[in-house]
Length: 193
Image 1 (spheres, rainbow, N blue to C red):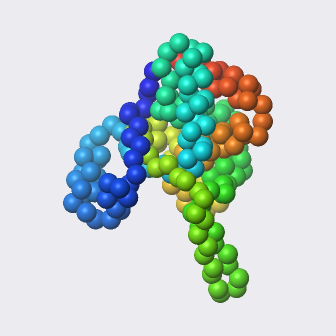
Image 2 (image 1 turned 135 degrees about the vertical axis):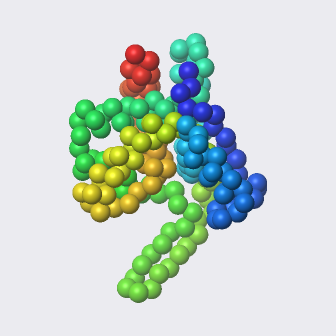
């Protein structure tokens, strides 16, 4: 079923993978230039990840075929792109990509020229890397480029994908669970056509 490449979930600090100009990152960037996929780093609350796993297991039991996180993300993203093309609404897209969910490790308060940062110890985050086809990513980056032209904002693709995922799970938590599951199954049927 999976249209995405494999998903690798790992703790980046444990593996020692630090951003920057390391030899590993230089080689990785050279390989990615010739690849048909792009690695997308996602960081989201662990509870969101666990809820997604539960949804995937339920859908898998309803469809009698494998349905994993990669399928879930692909379905959400494809539905987002399709609805953005059919009903283009830059204000709605702007709201989605600038939405800040209350899951950050630190809270930053600014009072005049003074900035206070407080750490939050109770937030557990899951970090993962998802490989997506470049052609699929290009559709999202096109929408982000249009937002830059209209509103002069710079948003990374990984932020867009993370917000699509979190928004769906937040709506699922606060709304009709059966409606959300039917929506995923409908999206799944639409993408298989």
